[in-house]
Length: 444
Ligand SMILES: [Zn+2]
Ligand SMILES: [Zn+2]
Image (cartoon, rainbow, N blue to C red; front, side, top):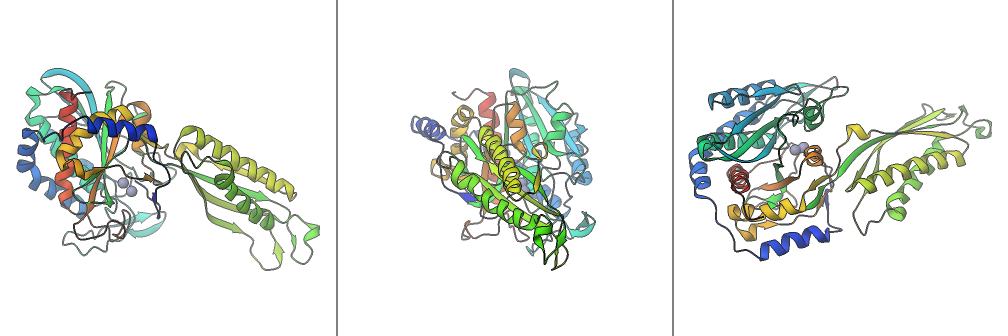
């Protein structure tokens, strides 16, 4: 989950999804947790914690998850499963239940980040690696260690009840969620490209994320858009180099670029229907010129676009290209705009009907009052790519311990991101409850 700072945006709640959740929830009593989930949690909690701490102490960067992947394979084999590897270090296995029923998939991500840990935990990472040519610390600063441990636990629980299981469950241990180092491919995109769903097409995919903005003990979920699409762009403004004392002899790309950045602010403020869904256009770097008295040939800029639905995404792309081309033209310059849509993530959109259907399962685990609808998140997730193929549900499990304010707690990606380990138990129970309720045909 690549998260920008200031990720909580509370502008809009998609009304339909909100109503779907509300009406369904009100129509039902708070369901109770399945007894087999309670029993499995008691049996596996210590194991899950040990796995998570081991992964935490040995984090690996995106597309470098060799050790993690090997541990997962070893565990799945010990359970009698036949894991296959794909997309470099991805691991996939299928649990075939003894009874007929639906096919679903559960996804956990496994990669860590180039962050030097500052939590002071006894099992804190001391790992280092190379990232973009630099020696960096490596840390599970996004909590994917928890996700991997939780799914290993769910795998063990499901195998133990395999004979009674109505349907099949695909376990997806995914590498490189944070993005493969360029020019490598990776993550959900590569899993799908290599045919993840070719022979086993699930009818639903479930995933979770531990999240510092949610208090431990709570689950945050919403139908419809949940997390933003994230798209990187680059704009090159070209003028004509000349002496800084005589700008009329050249074409100044610096003034054109400044004007372009200013005008680009109107894409969101004047042209995007932010009453419907929010959007962001951010310029993150600008580079042009070398000396105080030379007007350079070019200025290069890079930035990110965040949107929540495909039409708005394309509209912002078109507006940015227009602003760049015409603002540059007004200065006699030219602009080349590249938007790297294929490297980006689409918005993470929860299937509203599936969300409404599974809400009682989540409530069963933490209680009705502890499941709430979070604001839209400007961060993105490559889980979104599965959701494009199959109705999906992604939810947040609170990871900020009691007594710490989630609003000010170190966020995911911070060197001080501190996971309250009660979130392992809740993540495990919620994923298992959702799985069993779905397979057993929880009231649609
Ligand atoms: Zn992340
Ligand atoms: Zn993440």
